[in-house]
Every structure is written in structure tokens, then in C-alpha cells.
Length: 263
Image (cartoon, rainbow, N blue to C red):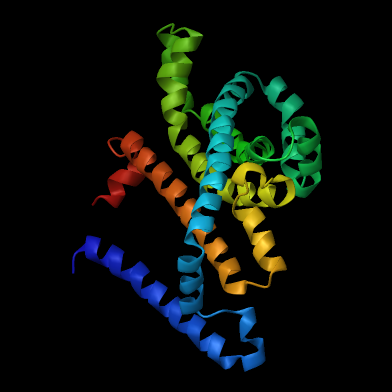
């Protein structure tokens, strides 16, 4: 059995097992309690029934997730570069970065609504907050973890500071950067959904998955509620797969982890 086929069969088998257990638990519950865990078939039927609403909501959430993610990447790269240049700068700013990361989104949501109004702008800003920290921390760690011998070699050849950063530290930091990117790509859709629950708006069909989930929960449409959760998972998988693809393109020719995985 080839490795490629095995990589396909293992997740497929696990998925089939999860669905089988899901059905088993559903039918094990007392009939009056089965609404707590709708069967996969009911969730799929709800997805088909509400696909237009869910597609529109997923697109709105995707916009907020992608905009916040892109803003987080841009700001993180700039700040990580500054943090890597001076230990004093890192010591001065790092506690405040941690404080920002540890502030719950529901607490920040009203502030964002006051600042920029409910809807896409608030969702983007809150997604930026949750995606920013893992990228800046991992990228900074990569920039300051460059092999000391290589740094000394660049100094020996009298390389300028910008040459050391662009030609040595940035390539060495790429694996760390993509690690932070993968974490951020995973949590950005979650952040967008939570932000949409707390700062979203339905004006102009602008409500996202989180806003729609609140509506389905209030209407006791539990299969549709599970369908919204599945839509969020799909969005997270797509963003994560895109980052993995970019990482492979950037690293597979020279980074050890990709070289070993190809053997």
C-alpha cells in the first residue's frame, strides 16, 4: 500500500468511525433527549435546507476572518522585526502583547462596536486581535534564534545589518513564521465567529456564522446549529490547508522537516 493511499485511508477511516459513534450515541439517548445530539443525516439535511443562508453567512465570516488574518500577518511581521532588533524593546512591549492576548473577545467586542460600529469592521478587528499574538511571538523567536555561528560569519564578512536580516535571519525564521501562521489560520475563523456573535450585524445581510448560530439556537433549530458549526470547521480547514501549501512551497526544497517527510 502506497504512502499516499495510506494518508487518504487513515483520515477517511477515522471519519467513518466518528460518524458511526455519533450515530450510536444519538440512538442510545432517550428519544426525548436526541435533540441534544442530532444525527449526522439530520445535520446534512439541515445544511441542504439552509444552504443559501449558511453560504451567505459563511462568506461574511470568511471576509472578517481573512481581513483580520491578513492585517495580523502584516502587523506581526513589522513588529516582530522591531522586537528582534533589541532586547530592551522586547522587554518593554512583550507584557502588553500578552495582556492583549489574554483579554477575552466578549470584553473587547463592546469597545470595538463603540470605536468602529457593529459588523464587518468589528469582526475584522477582533479577529486581528486573536490572530496577531501567535504570529508575532513565533516570528520573533525565529528571528532571534538564528545560528550564532552564521551570524558571526556575516559579521566576519562585514555584512550590513539589513543584509543580515534579509539574507540570514528572515530565511532562518520562516519555519517559525509558518508555525505561527498555521496557529493563527486555525483560530482566526473561531475568532471571527465569536466576534460575530458579540459584535456582528445583520444589516444588509451582513450577519456571519456566529450571528446565524445565535438565531438558530434561539429558534431551537439544533440540526441547523450543528450545520453552522460544520461550516466553521470547513472554513478553518481551508485556511489551514492554504497555509500548509504556502509553507511547503517556501520550505520543502531546503528545510529538514520537509526533506524527511518526502523520504
